[in-house]
Length: 432
Image: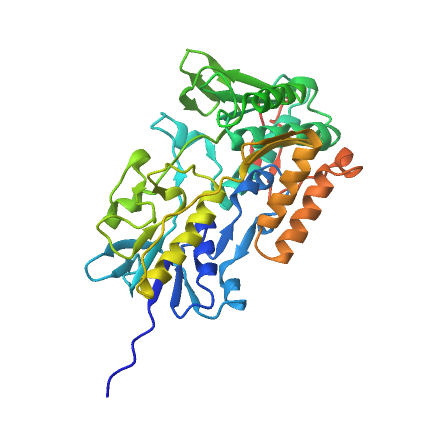
C-alpha cells in the first residue's frame, strides 16, 4: 500500500520582521512550519530608542513569539542558536547539538552592530540593536544623571555623544533632548543650563543622507533648535571611557557614547556555507533563493539582492512574504517569482510635533503631519493589540498635550550614588 506523501517542513530562522512575515504568510498552507530563534520574543526595533530614553517599557516593543500559535496551528517555535547547515542532508545543527531536518529553509536572522574596527568602540560605546542593549543604555543614562546630580556646583554635568547621523541617531538624540527639556530639568535641579549636552557626531557633512535635501535641512534646523549640537564632517577614530577622538584630531568629552551607525551579519553566519556579496551579506537571486542552494531563501537585512534593497523594515517584511510564496510555489511544482518591492517611503521622528516623512518618493511631510503619520505607521506595525495600546499610551503621555510638560521617564534598577566623602568634586561611586 503506497504511503501518503509527508507534509513538507519549512524552517524559518529568525523571528524579526522578515521571519514573522514569512511564518504568517504560511498560515493555512499544507506545510509544517518551525520558527527557530534564540530569543523568546520579537523586537520592534524602530522603537528601541524610546526604551533607551525612558519613554516606553521594554515589553511594549516586544512580542512573545509563541503567541503566534494562537492564530496559526501549523507553526511550532524552537528557541536555540543555529550552529551550522548541512545543505546536502537538508539538516540544521543547533548549538545544543540537536538537529532539525528541513525541506525548505528561510533564513531571516537579521544583522548586528558594526563597529568598523574602531579602537575602543566595542568596549566603551553602547550599541542599540536589541532590547537588552536599549535597557543597558537607559540604566547607564540614569546612573550618569545621578552621578552628575551628586556633584552640584561643579562643571561635571552630563555629555552624551550619539555616533551616526542616520535615522536611529537622529531619533535617539531628539528623544534625549526632549527628555532633558521636559522630564529632567524639574527632576534634576542640580544639573544647570548646558551641563546636560547631547551631540551627534557624523562622518558625513549632512544628516539622513537617504532623505531629500529639504527634509535633511529641516531635521538639522530642528535638532539645533532643540539644543542638539551637530559635529559633522569627521568620523570617530577611537572611543575612550571618557570621550571620543575624531578623525580630524578633535577630542570630545563623553560620559555616555551611543553607537548608532553601521550593521553587519552575525559572526555565526560564516559557518552556514552561504555565498556572500556586498557588505558581507548573503547573495540571493531576485526570487530570494540562494544560488546553488535550491529551496534555501534568505530575506531581510542579511540578504543582498540584485536590486540592492535597503536594510529597513519594509524590505524585510515584503521579502519574507515573497519567500513564503516562493516556497509554496516549489511545493506545488510551480516556478518561483521575483520580489517586486514597493517602496512605501521612509520616516524619522525628531521630537514632539516634529518628524519627517518621504512617502513613496512623491510626498514630503514635516512637523505635526509627519509626526502623526509616523505615530500611525509605528503603532500599526506592532504585533498584538496589547502592544499597540500600551505603546500608544506611552507615546501620548510622552508627547501629547498637556502630559509632555511633566514627563516622568521609565527607569530601571539604578543604584544609589553618593558624593565622595570630604566634599570633593569627583563623582561618587554607585552603591547597591
